[in-house]
Image (tube, rainbow, N blue to C red):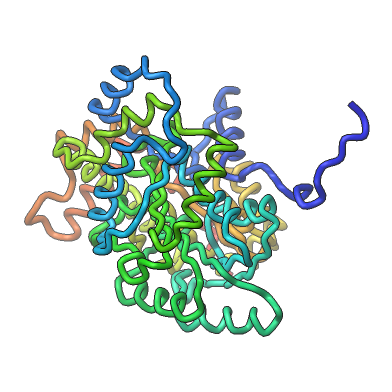
Length: 441
């Protein structure tokens, strides 16, 4: 058909960089090439048997569910998330959607005004604003603050943007963070919440990695700012259920108008999440000891593997705070800038990612995918290129870092675990060392 015209606002919309790199790596591997995949963040562990049993038992359920989700699931999800995210206020309603990505998009679509965007941030936030036709107020963050937002910076950017005639009304906060692996403590969250309350800013709090936080419990900003925070989360990270496509949004009852618009959007787009999926994940929102133990084991393995990659950055002389959750890091290779330019003609993060893949078979994502400036030599490194069943089995048989061992002995045991159970991660790290081993200029 001739004469079809694409909407001007969508002509700049590109395919998701994370999904694209995953498809490219899959194709390389189908062609027989070995690729060390640090470009995509899919938790690799097997589906817990209790959830597998659930989905097979509910395959005959074929009726439509309510647009906001099955009542029993919404009730269980609400209680479970309030407890796990340390939210004392219980005045929230629940929306079930086909993944938290869809729910974040629907919230952006529903709420008028400009988006406050701390950069770097997850790859889909800004592309979603192209579809909703929202304006973006960038808040650049750097390695000197571990890429974390603070209340003073947020307040200054709100005031500046309003003086410029902008209308910032919503902030996306993601923690533990993709791409940085950093999280926020209670004092930091309380400060950000106070600023948002002062300026009537809605917080869209993307807490999908809440249960993959290392060594400290996660607390939602909704604990400090319950009337103005919508929490989004799901099952893809701590339960390795990305393909199930089930997300949850907790919407304050004070924002009833937003909740009703989200229901209406659902009714006119995806209708409802798959019925067998909703039934099968009921057990995921219970205090099931076996599932809770599985989550703790998987999180500990993520921690061990992430620390292994972090120690590689230390070997390279890259200054980076120890990751606090999730399975990512966002190192800055600026200390290698002159050598990369002189030896390889590499000047941007896109060129660095392409050159790494071409010369070392290590797949990464450039900083530009996360809203960073092209000349910043930052890459997101994902730490999940391993067989989850192998790693989980080995961990259960011989967990590294037994009680009473010295820090050095624990580190040695963790290194041995990664090299045996996660060999592609170990080899990818070695290739990064080889690539940058010419030294900083």
